[in-house]
Image 1 (cartoon, helix red, strand yellow):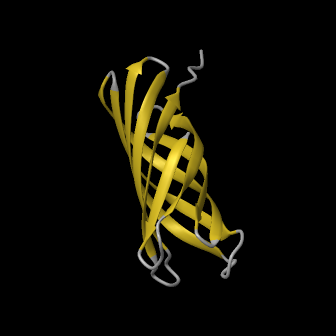
Image 2: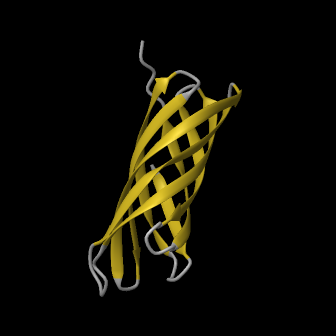
Length: 134
């Protein structure tokens, strides 16, 4: 969870917050992240969700890197253009764990809408809370 920003190629920057959960499906090979982001700017508010399939790389006991791809759907909730778009999202995820269950992350994301070619760059940073299963 944390703040997020998006810089579309054709509009003003949007800022808001993000929340996601992640589950390791195949240890050291596949993690799945489901997230929601609410962004706003002058004139409209956008809610988006994505499911990202990630390949983790543990660089050290306190640093983890992931690369991911998946679908993203966003809906403009108010303003002139209230529409829904589906895009492909490509992410890099940098996670820092100074303690075993609490850390922070930086996640840049690039999205491309295959229908109209619109692209945007987004970034989020925030708190990580690990829940270890026994």
